[in-house]
View 1 (cartoon, rainbow, N blue to C red):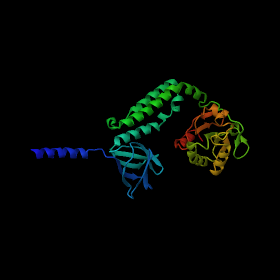
View 2 (view 1 turned 90 degrees about the vertical axis):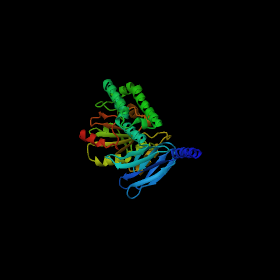
View 3 (view 1 turned 30 degrees about the horizontal axis):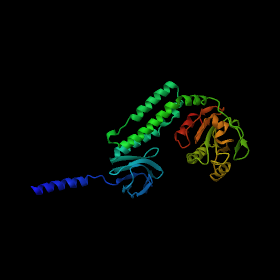
View 4 (view 1 turned 180 degrees about the vertical axis):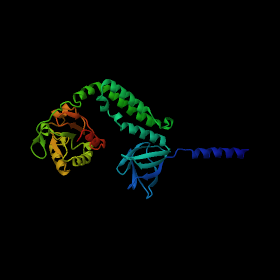
Length: 341
């Protein structure tokens, strides 16, 4: 009888040991995208590069603190949530716009939920200006639709890590709180800058090519304006796309104008840094320097307090869109086609 009891106790102890949470997370999978030889996991002070085999497969364990990480494969990125005990299967597939990560295995629900919500925050539903430009009835309808859309999920929420639900929920609250508390003021401001309204003007801005240029000098063409600065990372990331756009539309009825708001006092960027970057990067189009950085009359008239900002003006000098799509957005060229450019 005593021996039977010890056998029973041993079985319980063994079971307890084997059910302990591992002190690492594991990932494995396959990359179905050409020319990817490794993937990088990065975040929270942790970095791990994982080699991708010739057949596209990969596998590794990660002793990473619990939390969100960036998964980098070539030029594409995805968000990854890691936690000890997770055993994730990842498949990277080429989508129309960017690579997509498909998750299965332990921890998949949390990561699929993150991917689902990231898609929402990358959509126009997360752009406050898409609400501010609407009249009251349309604004209220869109806000209701957005909240319903956010709350939709194809994932079993009961299997999603509670900390992730909390983080996503905070982002949701912040977005809609901002939209609701700022609608009235911003709607009134945007109404003054609505399509068809005469554009505010700039006069005698220094032109890198020599002399000065005013908006009135450009009448007769569509004018695509880029408000940027040498110290602005997101601005600089748009430069390659802007160069390609300028090249493709060369000779057409559109002028590409870049206006630098580098500080005139040199505290954040400077006139010299603007001259150097335009020269070194061989920036095309019409390169202008605002007369008083963010305090320039033209910049203030468009209520610009963050950059990059892109504006489209028609051949008559009227506003087409006071906050038009960026050069990197593939939909911009479709928009130009609709306008007959």
